[in-house]
Amino acid sequence: MNRPLSPSIRAVYMRGGASKGLFLHEQDLPRRPELRDALLLRLMGNPDPQGLQSDGLGGARSGTSKLAIIAPSRRGDCDVDYLHGDVAPDAAQIDWSGHCAQLSAAVGPFAIHEGLVRPADGIARVRIWQRNLGRRIDALVPVQQGQVLESGQFADEGVAFRGAEIRLEFHQPGPDEVAPLLPTGEPSQVLMVPGLGALRVSIIDAGGPVVFLRADALDLDGTELPERFNRAHGKLRLLSAIRAQAAVLLGLAASASQAQDLLPAVPRLCWVAAPKSYRLGRGREVSADQVDVLARFLSMGRLQDGFAAEQAIAVAAAAALPGTLVNEITRTLPGVATRIGHVSGTLAVGAEVSTLQGRWHLDKAVVSRSARRLMGGQVYWPDDVPGLLPGHF
Image (tube, rainbow, N blue to C red; front, side, top):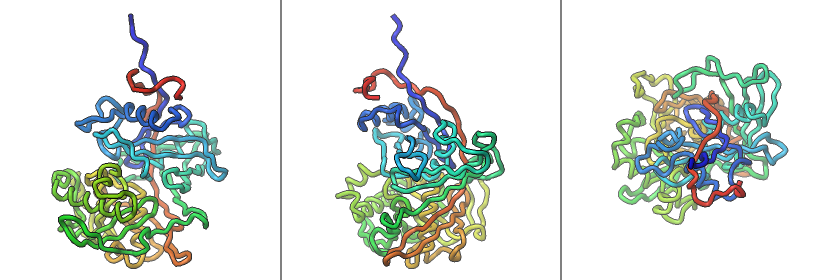
């Protein structure tokens, strides 16, 4: 006798910036978080000891192994709610504590494609409540004849093809919810790192905490590229140790070992350097006069091969803040977008900061990305996923 078909759920696979992820409607998922996560991990192909996610839809690296859960907004000032998940390719774990601003570029188009927002032609403003951050993001999406316009001449670093520009505006919370840019209250402080000793860092929270350090403090120069650097296991362990100590300082974990085990994505870590010329992995040269600062990000224990928009916002905000390590070396002017040299090219980000009641905060950040719907339909999973019954949906 034939076995019944594997159960399935509707999903859309979308690119936002240089990231990709699986987009699902919250109403289609199990209500209990532990069952929801078990299902999502199986859909992505996790855990896979080889990190290939070959029995799922994960993309085998951090930038292409992401989840987006979308629902009509519960708030009167937004159109949709967006919950973001990072999935490490080799782990049975979804990190719901972070955020991917690149993938955020696809939320507005998804909402329009799926009928959650019905815009007029022109530039549609889709108001997104980012649940991980508790902040509003406005996506300005080009629309033609009621459909998202995906083709255009906008060049998105890390993306092989040109597309239509989607402008993202990251808004500061309301006056009663103002989040300080300096979570420790200081523009820089010293971390004591086992095996290294005292290290001066800056910690910025412009949509998720980021630990900044100067590249030359670790004999780096800010021009590192992933293929070679990700084989430097000693450096990767040291950078991970720095990140873990910062997590303890921020109160995100009780110990460095707990931070390593439970918080692989938060806080982020970035090393920065003064402008200099360098070559991208595909051979194209970025000249020193094209950038104001060099930046490299550690993501899930490895040098990231793309550059997320929220990370660029953190760099731009740190560059605007007096006393931070980034401000000390960045070549930029107040009110001018900061041009960041990263592993895939360059990215210009505008950040407006000000003080309120003696604390620095981010007023607004603006970055442009592109997005595209790659495929949509039913995604299947084996009928042996433990605990999943029809009543759980």
